[in-house]
Length: 292
Image (cartoon, rainbow, N blue to C red; front, side):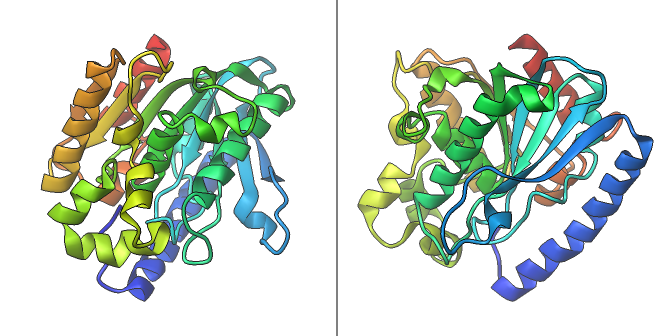
């Protein structure tokens, strides 16, 4: 998750990035190499804006049964949106993938575990309705950026969220995490107390028991059908140490986990540039997807 100075400033930045990403998305749409199913409501929650429980699905124009990549946006669990998709739609659909970009409820209106419950409902919806969008329900991958990577890692290690929707961890074929530091919340609280208090408290509260429950590292164990992981970090202290802790724990449990350090990039640039021609993280992600 990012380290904000002021919440309003960060929300303004997300709005600005949204305009940039939307422009890129429009260029991709003009290429007309994919179909867009927009604002699909995957769950109805009384009193909740349907936009917060909706998704956009981008599918290759040619009929088929394609692997599905579920994208979970960043924003500290209090900002962000499914719509700033940038270059991803064209890149993934041109390589034979369905891309589903999902929204979920945001803090402070909700706290853990609402974000996870929403994302699990979205995955279950796609699993059930994959054929409507040209997707293969047996080939679902998660791609999370920043706080979205935290959600993706937790969904793939703590089985209770998918089980509540009638699915097992084995329903996920792989997880891609882009530059997150919250895989072990109590550890992060000690390492970066100001960051933790300014960002994580509003999503996870002040109960250390909740912090432990919301930490993917506390749910890793052998024999759980945890899917393979591809974990990116940019070398900053917290993200690097956390990525290494996550990778080590996964490999110790017998899970295929690849760790990738990307230099010369920014936190937001890593997500923004995903899908660009010649982009190295994009190349590695497609290698990972093809492998699994």
